[in-house]
Length: 246
Image (cartoon, rainbow, N blue to C red; front, side):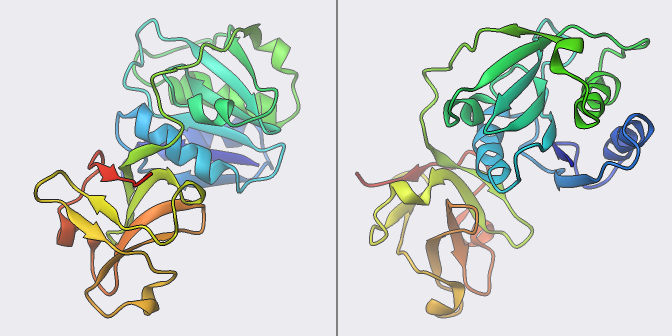
């Protein structure tokens, strides 16, 4: 399948235009829209979100990923291979965590060029046609050449920030739950006005209106309020810090 991971938003024409290209170039291959509201123009938090949610998909999946504030610049267009999955998109750190966490990752720079390439919509004009070719079985070498992976060593293995606010107002962090003591309290927000949040396994384990943190179904530490919105109750947004005890 082809999986879309973008910051295009839930309205507007952009996702539909990319899907039209995929249907044209890879007819019959299922397309799944995983995220259309990844952190807008922010590859760093989006990278931690992508790494957590991509791991749910089987080997052979092609991810079409567009969080691309540098579109039209000299940033490279790349294909990453990690965990048996392929990722097509900009070389701006979006694939840093999937590459870092995989055994034997590889990276290619896209050299194929479409007949027409707009300056502002490489998702439609470049990345979608390449993703379609890969999904239908074309060799990577027909569209790209191998390049060295250049790790972003200043990016932590887990990002102690909010990386996503979901439809319910739950605040997902870039921290894998397996790295946190399940009995620990997390501080969300900046001192001195931050709030200490106790752990709970499920929403029903705490009273209505109570804030808590838990490990969500994709393995990330998440801040929630039973029966309410954590973002509103705690003043959280993408980028809000989370203090994780050692």
